[in-house]
Image (cartoon, rainbow over all chains, first blue to last red; front, side, top):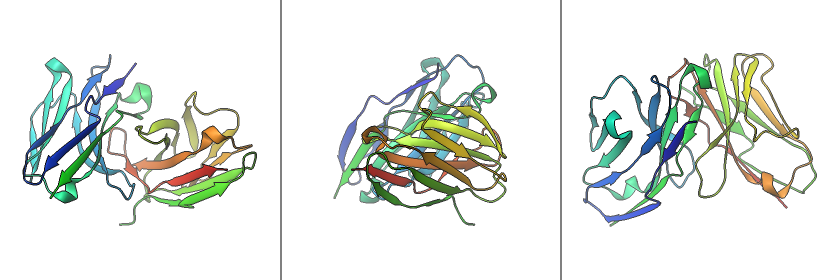
Length: 116
Length: 113
């Protein structure tokens, strides 16, 4: 069965600090997808990134970067020079592919608070 | 580009009443998912449609829950004889192809009095 663990329930940082959100996943499939979503106080889940299991290249998008390591089943998310607008709940999610109809299994989320 | 639309945004009802939510996915997205999110938790899968066919239902979806997508476009989720435990945010998501990102609506927040 697929499972996603986000061990950090809450993180609080001061603006301009770097912060890393951890995500560990479990799956028996060899083909799967990993996602990060942001849920600001307004409530809508906003898609940030998708990785497939065959692509372990790290990715950078502006202040955001993602580190995918199959050896440790981790898909961590780093925000560089955090800003107050980054305050939100961040969810890591796993999709196992055709056998599971690509439904998402979410972690419990990490509440990030960036203080001015 | 319009996103996923859900209505109503909020629904307050008395225990035992029936409620129905609507989801309009992004046009041309033939895959549609319903999730439920309770406070402090990540969303949990409820059911999945590919076009008009309901292909998977979670064990979370008791007999009181029913979902439809009659013409492969919008979808409805009905809860009959609501219970206190049904209070949650109900989220709808759609995607264009298998494995592609799911895009979520704002959700319908259900409160049972």
